[in-house]
Length: 458
Image 1 (cartoon, rainbow, N blue to C red):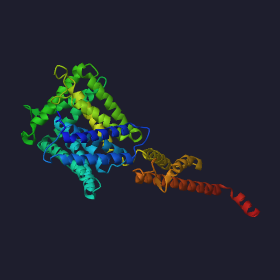
Image 2: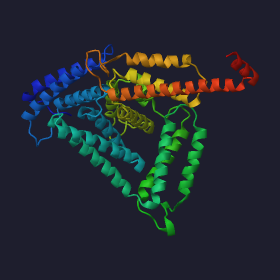
Image 3: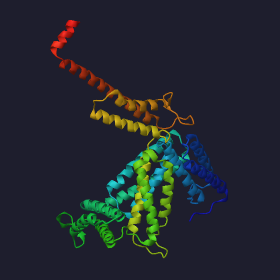
Image 4: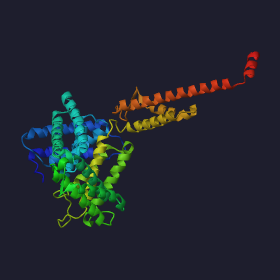
């Protein structure tokens, strides 16, 4: 439960709530593009309130009241706005990515089901994000209060990653292949439990593989070369037993979902969120506004908070069956949000339609060039027209926003545009060569006598 808000912090709380409301209104307005000037004004307003908050607080005390939770909401919304504007290489854009990583890493730590290939991508991503924060800290582009906050969060996530890697180092070399395979099988089983329909054909090979792994144990122990008993038996054995447990639960249920009726509303909501997020992963280049992810994150956090000691409970405090399925869906949704955030391109939403159109034109031109002619100027006309229309949008060589500003992503869009022009010129050259070759071949095929007659006439 959050602590009460001190009297001197009440004006700050009121101002921060007002900023959050303005950001929420900005997020909901789909009629217009988000303007950098509006986001920057709200960002400066937040920085001002954070500075005031630091002045009334003690640096050596940890605080957690309504001001902190509201500020977290504000920073999440601001971070998503920066991603929407294509400012992916600036400090504020890092905040939402760190929050998403924390959710996934915390669940990985809780479950204990991961391997080296799961952890390494997070380690590399943290290094990339740290370099962004360090660059902004050195250049003074963003306030010290923000860069320090992000550095603290980066250090906390680094500590979680190190903890995960240390726990993996406890697994003996002989058991690493067994551990990796068991983690993979468990994920496949939980994914099957969350799927519609009968899984008999898909379960059979997994069940056979589990029995094969189990048969390698002697008196309940996995043995290494020479009959030695490697360390970390408990880790592998517990995952193996858990796999058999999930397998039996799936087999025991003839229903399409192994979820108790008391947990059905949570299950249905998670299924709905997963379907929407998976659709966004496929269509994000055309339909995603990064600020939309805020509502998904909020919904998942609310569901996550329903757990007691890591489990979902019913009205009587019992733990109904279906826990594996719900946790799989929850973690799947967290993973999809992180995937969408980390794949966000440094292109403003205002330039994204142009970037998408150029990407499509480039793909088409590459296919035409790959398969070659014969083709005529008429075949190339649609591409020339598309590029001409895009070229005509520029002012003084730049794509300008509705409010007269220069949106992020000019370099990427211009690179796409130049590539399209180059491909078009290459196609024109190949078309001319084919035409010249055609006329040369026509001359060679002419009757020699008729050629002589032409010369005599001349």
